[in-house]
Image (cartoon, rainbow, N blue to C red; front, side, top):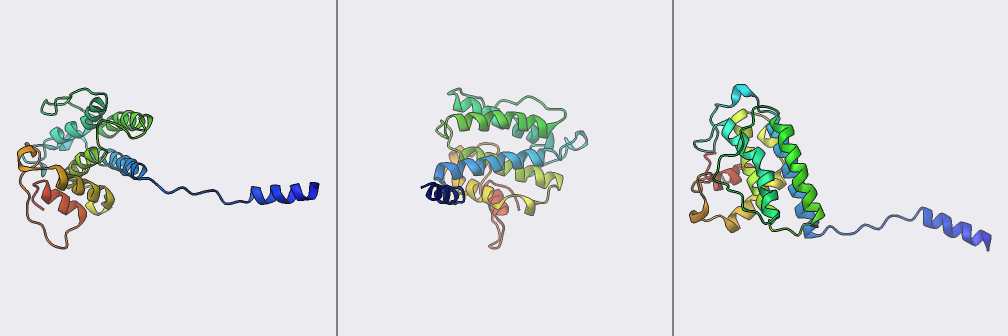
Length: 199
Protein backbone atom coordinates (compact mmCIF):
# COMPACT_ATOMS: atom_id res chain seq x y z
CA UNK A 1 0.00 0.00 0.00
CA UNK A 2 2.79 2.42 0.93
CA UNK A 3 4.51 1.63 -2.35
CA UNK A 4 1.35 2.49 -4.27
CA UNK A 5 1.05 5.82 -2.43
CA UNK A 6 4.67 6.62 -3.26
CA UNK A 7 4.11 5.96 -6.96
CA UNK A 8 0.89 8.01 -6.96
CA UNK A 9 2.60 10.88 -5.16
CA UNK A 10 5.47 10.87 -7.62
CA UNK A 11 3.10 10.87 -10.57
CA UNK A 12 1.13 13.75 -9.08
CA UNK A 13 4.29 15.73 -8.40
CA UNK A 14 5.37 15.55 -12.03
CA UNK A 15 1.94 16.11 -13.59
CA UNK A 16 1.94 18.97 -16.10
CA UNK A 17 -0.09 22.01 -14.99
CA UNK A 18 -3.48 22.54 -16.56
CA UNK A 19 -3.39 25.30 -19.18
CA UNK A 20 -6.65 27.21 -19.51
CA UNK A 21 -7.42 29.04 -22.77
CA UNK A 22 -7.19 32.84 -22.64
CA UNK A 23 -10.61 34.47 -22.79
CA UNK A 24 -11.41 37.51 -24.92
CA UNK A 25 -11.53 39.56 -21.71
CA UNK A 26 -8.06 38.35 -20.72
CA UNK A 27 -6.75 39.13 -24.19
CA UNK A 28 -8.18 42.66 -24.13
CA UNK A 29 -6.63 43.32 -20.73
CA UNK A 30 -3.26 42.05 -21.95
CA UNK A 31 -3.29 44.39 -24.96
CA UNK A 32 -4.39 47.30 -22.76
CA UNK A 33 -1.49 46.63 -20.39
CA UNK A 34 0.93 46.63 -23.33
CA UNK A 35 -0.50 49.91 -24.64
CA UNK A 36 0.00 51.52 -21.22
CA UNK A 37 3.55 50.21 -20.91
CA UNK A 38 4.39 51.39 -24.40
CA UNK A 39 3.03 54.90 -23.82
CA UNK A 40 5.13 55.19 -20.67
CA UNK A 41 8.23 54.12 -22.61
CA UNK A 42 7.59 56.77 -25.29
CA UNK A 43 7.03 59.46 -22.65
CA UNK A 44 10.45 58.63 -21.17
CA UNK A 45 11.92 60.33 -24.26
CA UNK A 46 10.27 63.68 -23.50
CA UNK A 47 12.48 66.38 -21.98
CA UNK A 48 12.10 70.15 -21.54
CA UNK A 49 14.12 71.07 -24.64
CA UNK A 50 11.62 69.40 -27.03
CA UNK A 51 8.32 70.66 -25.60
CA UNK A 52 7.79 73.28 -28.31
CA UNK A 53 8.40 70.91 -31.23
CA UNK A 54 5.43 70.19 -33.54
CA UNK A 55 3.76 66.79 -33.70
CA UNK A 56 1.68 64.97 -36.33
CA UNK A 57 -1.39 65.92 -34.26
CA UNK A 58 -2.13 69.24 -35.96
CA UNK A 59 -1.76 72.27 -33.70
CA UNK A 60 -0.34 70.24 -30.81
CA UNK A 61 3.24 70.64 -29.64
CA UNK A 62 5.16 67.88 -27.90
CA UNK A 63 4.36 69.55 -24.57
CA UNK A 64 0.62 69.73 -25.23
CA UNK A 65 0.53 66.15 -26.50
CA UNK A 66 2.59 64.84 -23.59
CA UNK A 67 0.24 66.53 -21.10
CA UNK A 68 -2.75 64.98 -22.89
CA UNK A 69 -1.20 61.51 -22.88
CA UNK A 70 -0.14 61.71 -19.23
CA UNK A 71 -3.71 62.66 -18.27
CA UNK A 72 -5.37 59.86 -20.23
CA UNK A 73 -5.26 57.09 -17.56
CA UNK A 74 -6.77 59.40 -14.93
CA UNK A 75 -9.55 60.40 -17.29
CA UNK A 76 -10.37 56.81 -18.20
CA UNK A 77 -10.26 55.90 -14.52
CA UNK A 78 -12.77 58.67 -13.79
CA UNK A 79 -15.05 57.27 -16.49
CA UNK A 80 -14.83 53.81 -14.93
CA UNK A 81 -16.06 55.42 -11.70
CA UNK A 82 -19.09 56.90 -13.51
CA UNK A 83 -17.57 60.38 -13.50
CA UNK A 84 -17.57 62.65 -16.56
CA UNK A 85 -14.09 64.05 -17.24
CA UNK A 86 -13.92 67.01 -19.61
CA UNK A 87 -11.71 65.76 -22.42
CA UNK A 88 -11.79 69.19 -24.05
CA UNK A 89 -10.33 70.92 -20.98
CA UNK A 90 -6.54 71.45 -20.86
CA UNK A 91 -4.98 68.77 -18.64
CA UNK A 92 -2.54 69.60 -15.84
CA UNK A 93 0.80 70.75 -17.21
CA UNK A 94 3.69 68.38 -16.55
CA UNK A 95 7.18 69.91 -16.41
CA UNK A 96 9.33 66.81 -15.89
CA UNK A 97 9.25 63.05 -15.25
CA UNK A 98 6.62 62.45 -17.94
CA UNK A 99 7.14 58.70 -18.04
CA UNK A 100 7.03 58.08 -14.26
CA UNK A 101 4.07 60.46 -13.84
CA UNK A 102 2.17 58.56 -16.52
CA UNK A 103 3.05 55.17 -15.03
CA UNK A 104 1.73 56.17 -11.59
CA UNK A 105 -1.64 57.00 -13.17
CA UNK A 106 -1.54 53.94 -15.42
CA UNK A 107 -0.91 51.67 -12.41
CA UNK A 108 -4.01 53.05 -10.67
CA UNK A 109 -6.07 52.57 -13.82
CA UNK A 110 -5.03 48.99 -14.58
CA UNK A 111 -5.29 47.99 -10.90
CA UNK A 112 -8.89 49.15 -10.76
CA UNK A 113 -9.50 47.47 -14.11
CA UNK A 114 -8.35 44.15 -12.60
CA UNK A 115 -10.41 44.73 -9.45
CA UNK A 116 -13.51 45.11 -11.62
CA UNK A 117 -12.62 41.96 -13.50
CA UNK A 118 -12.50 43.86 -16.77
CA UNK A 119 -16.18 44.74 -16.38
CA UNK A 120 -16.10 48.51 -16.47
CA UNK A 121 -17.91 51.36 -18.16
CA UNK A 122 -14.99 51.78 -20.58
CA UNK A 123 -14.44 49.19 -23.34
CA UNK A 124 -10.75 48.20 -23.16
CA UNK A 125 -10.05 48.94 -26.80
CA UNK A 126 -10.99 52.60 -26.34
CA UNK A 127 -7.97 53.47 -24.16
CA UNK A 128 -5.85 51.23 -26.39
CA UNK A 129 -6.84 53.39 -29.39
CA UNK A 130 -6.18 56.65 -27.54
CA UNK A 131 -2.79 55.47 -26.32
CA UNK A 132 -1.70 53.89 -29.59
CA UNK A 133 -2.40 56.92 -31.78
CA UNK A 134 -0.75 59.39 -29.43
CA UNK A 135 2.22 57.11 -28.76
CA UNK A 136 2.80 57.11 -32.52
CA UNK A 137 2.34 60.89 -32.63
CA UNK A 138 4.90 61.42 -29.92
CA UNK A 139 7.42 58.85 -31.16
CA UNK A 140 7.22 60.36 -34.64
CA UNK A 141 7.73 63.91 -33.32
CA UNK A 142 10.68 62.88 -31.16
CA UNK A 143 12.25 60.44 -33.61
CA UNK A 144 12.42 57.86 -30.85
CA UNK A 145 11.75 55.16 -29.99
CA UNK A 146 11.79 53.79 -33.56
CA UNK A 147 8.28 53.25 -34.92
CA UNK A 148 9.12 49.67 -35.86
CA UNK A 149 9.83 48.96 -32.19
CA UNK A 150 6.21 49.72 -31.22
CA UNK A 151 3.94 46.72 -30.71
CA UNK A 152 1.93 45.91 -33.86
CA UNK A 153 -0.86 44.22 -31.90
CA UNK A 154 -1.62 47.45 -30.05
CA UNK A 155 -2.01 49.34 -33.34
CA UNK A 156 -4.13 46.60 -34.91
CA UNK A 157 -6.49 46.57 -31.93
CA UNK A 158 -6.68 50.36 -31.96
CA UNK A 159 -7.43 50.52 -35.69
CA UNK A 160 -10.20 47.93 -35.43
CA UNK A 161 -11.83 49.92 -32.63
CA UNK A 162 -11.52 53.23 -34.45
CA UNK A 163 -12.91 51.84 -37.71
CA UNK A 164 -15.94 50.57 -35.80
CA UNK A 165 -16.55 53.72 -33.76
CA UNK A 166 -14.97 56.83 -35.27
CA UNK A 167 -17.21 58.83 -37.58
CA UNK A 168 -16.88 62.29 -39.12
CA UNK A 169 -19.22 63.71 -36.48
CA UNK A 170 -17.13 62.55 -33.51
CA UNK A 171 -13.56 62.92 -34.77
CA UNK A 172 -13.06 66.18 -32.90
CA UNK A 173 -9.88 68.26 -33.02
CA UNK A 174 -7.46 65.38 -32.43
CA UNK A 175 -8.57 63.19 -35.35
CA UNK A 176 -8.82 64.69 -38.82
CA UNK A 177 -10.28 63.08 -41.95
CA UNK A 178 -8.74 59.77 -42.98
CA UNK A 179 -5.61 60.17 -45.12
CA UNK A 180 -4.30 57.91 -47.89
CA UNK A 181 -1.75 55.26 -47.01
CA UNK A 182 0.40 52.87 -49.03
CA UNK A 183 -0.77 49.30 -49.51
CA UNK A 184 2.36 48.01 -47.79
CA UNK A 185 2.12 50.38 -44.84
CA UNK A 186 2.67 48.95 -41.39
CA UNK A 187 0.01 48.83 -38.66
CA UNK A 188 0.99 52.17 -37.11
CA UNK A 189 1.05 53.95 -40.47
CA UNK A 190 -2.44 52.59 -41.23
CA UNK A 191 -3.66 53.62 -37.80
CA UNK A 192 -2.14 57.09 -38.11
CA UNK A 193 -3.63 57.63 -41.58
CA UNK A 194 -7.07 56.62 -40.36
CA UNK A 195 -6.66 59.08 -37.48
CA UNK A 196 -6.02 61.87 -39.98
CA UNK A 197 -2.24 61.98 -39.88
CA UNK A 198 -0.05 62.40 -42.95
CA UNK A 199 2.21 59.34 -43.22
